[in-house]
Length: 461
Image (cartoon, rainbow, N blue to C red; front, side, top):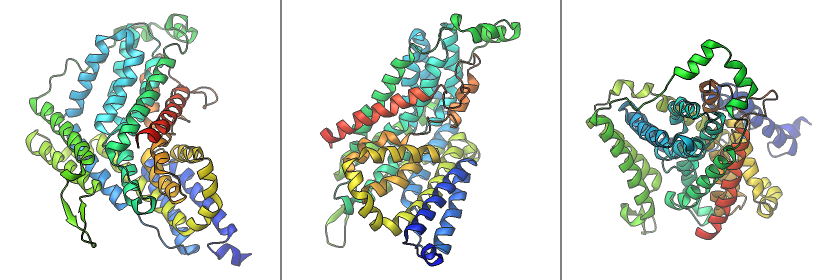
């Protein structure tokens, strides 16, 4: 019995290793992204030092690309460029307040697409609530779908951690799958797929819940004079803010960098090339391209946009991004160690199943995303396995939307913030936890994205 357990390729040992990985993921999520990376180290140590598995490869290329993007975005935030972008978004929302339930999710989605992170949504929540209240619209309708749409925007952003990770994974496995897709090719599928999910979820949200005048819970709270006064008099807005010219310049630099990355990805000939071992010219990889462009753009913002360099590392974008890097580091290294050791057994037992039912990959990706609360970490852990098992890379790209699975339970920071900003209490967690405000919009968005993405991938790629 002991020999079977110590033999790393035995069935008992493999089952124990899987339980260790799941245990590390479940325990790690209790301590946030940083804790997830650290706890994954426990699983890694057990597999290497107790089961004797050879350590896998940490995702260094992906991590360096993420760091470059986060550094640039954090510099943009410190230069007040993010506030400029959100002010413009508010102008659109306040120009058409009666359409807030449709426009709010489109706005948060678009901000995430531009910035590469869903954490830009926090400033928008009080603005969305204020507009909804002034029009007598139940705040849950635009706020809940705006929160899920911000996360859906990650799958449509050329500079998001998840998109960069997916492109890197496809490029690194190009020798195995005989096909790699560039960021523009991925976005050609991902943008319409993601946007379709957001729009359908927004349309569904138009009629959700009771109107405020018919909501007994809200009407009971309005009997409190202090509460009623806070609802009637408060106003949240960025419209009165005056930004220096340097803030606007930082936005143009950042958007220019994004456009440059997309162009270089679409036209390989524009990238410098050098001969490989066989004498063939090999263009600069997109991983290195993104790293260079983002570092350059961040430097331009730092030098010419009056940025306080001492405060860049304390911005919310930098903190959230570096937490994601650490999470990806631990989770991906632990997962790669396990799957690299057992890929032959897994391919023999699961290869036929996933090729016959590729949607099983999407389900696994969705569940892992919920466990790790990160689209990028889920992709880095699961996408290479899918490719190794013989899943068509078109399927991997088509099911990109399934990387957003943390709408299942209301534990993600942006969802919790959304609940906190809705003073009416209409955006909430239900009695049974699973019946919360984000469940249906999230499910509609992801399911629609996967269906549309799968169809587009087969047609366009």
